[in-house]
Amino acid sequence: MATPQQGPSPEFALAYRETLLQGFENEIQITKRVIAAIPDAKSDYKPDAHARTAAELAWHIANTDVQFLDGIGDLEFKMENPDAENKPKTSADVASWYEQNCARAIAKVRGLNAEQLLTPVNFMGAFNLPAVFYLGFLNNHSIHHRGELATYLRPMGSKCPSIYGGSYDEPWQGASAETAA
Image 1: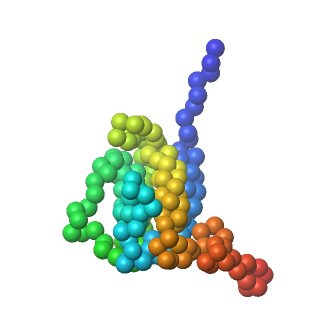
Image 2: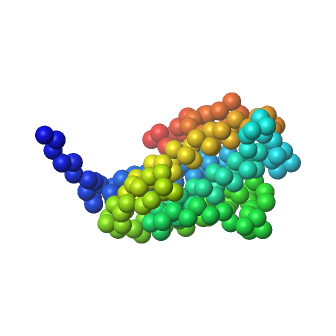
């Protein structure tokens, strides 16, 4: 006979949220740099006829990350796109919009109590998970598309920033004497 499984505890939900949000806040800084590296004159680049353009992919990352965070914070996924006239036009504007709106939405998620974090939330009929578990999905989705966008940069004539250590274009410098001490 199977023993009943206990769900996540309130303490787990709070700790899990904080762990994933701290990690995601680090990822935002990297993602912002990858988006900002898109040359605006070549933002229509796409490696294949079936791929998104660099501008479309950058907006998909920025907008979807914010929508995921808002959906978690609201305990309801709407996944609506802002109208075209309110969408940022340049890579720098997308990166800035991304950082500002992620900070706002993260504050909303941090404002949830443990009971809210454990509330099951329907995601477009595909999942019905406790709200806090969508933070892992958010992180994976963002990193996946950021990697995709990073592969566009050199063919567009840009440089690939350091992501998890150095890149050819931005070699790792190692720990400075100040941080090593």
